[in-house]
Length: 300
Image (cartoon, rainbow, N blue to C red; front, side, top):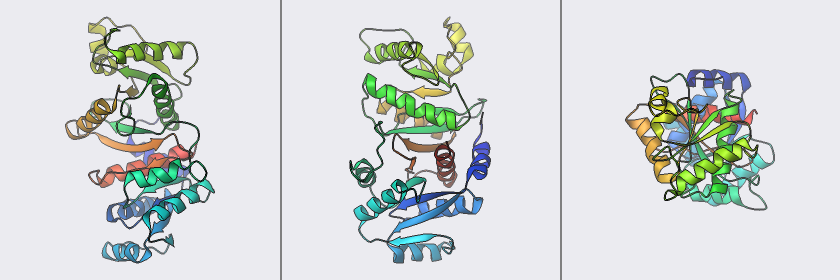
């Protein structure tokens, strides 16, 4: 089982290179990240966007474009459509957002006739390495689904579990997080967590062990779980953290990054291929990690 980002990069090099299609590629940060991944030997790339601007950014940053295909498209929506088409036709294994609003990329992905939807739900899956823990944490959903229903939480778990499997964890322990670890009829998140655990027991959610409700402490700390007298295979040993809504997910994700100094990667799951959507605030290391993660997922 992969436990560090160094191992992710090493395994991605073994699996790669895979081809990534970059939608509206005229973005300095994205071009740098893709070039770093290319030099690391994990990807090839198709840049879709304004060729003149792409070449200008490359010259200014010492990026050699000789090994890349560039499809010259000025219109951003059309560039997204063509990048998606590259993936749909098998010319690329994954998609990456460049200098364009996320909504424009997702519109192309969600197109019923020409998009990449697989019948699942799109959800953001973060992978984080926090100092002091012997494993990577998978966190979802911190960016896509505002207030997921029970049915949507099932899909969010399934997407997160696919990432865990790509990291070599065949039976990840999934903790459904709430503010408390006991079912409270006044707290819908605890009712959902209890039902998700029961669905897992009935075999309706597979490839993992689901437990909940858990507060964060007794999901990740054996000591906290023991102190509360919680006896469950997931208690204190969670690999996957499922948050009740986007606010909780986003706050936990960013607190782990900024307060906990966690290394991180992020991916959009649920489409026909992994989608790399990096923030401008993300570090160069995080962008490279995200591309490497996409390579592993696309190799499954």
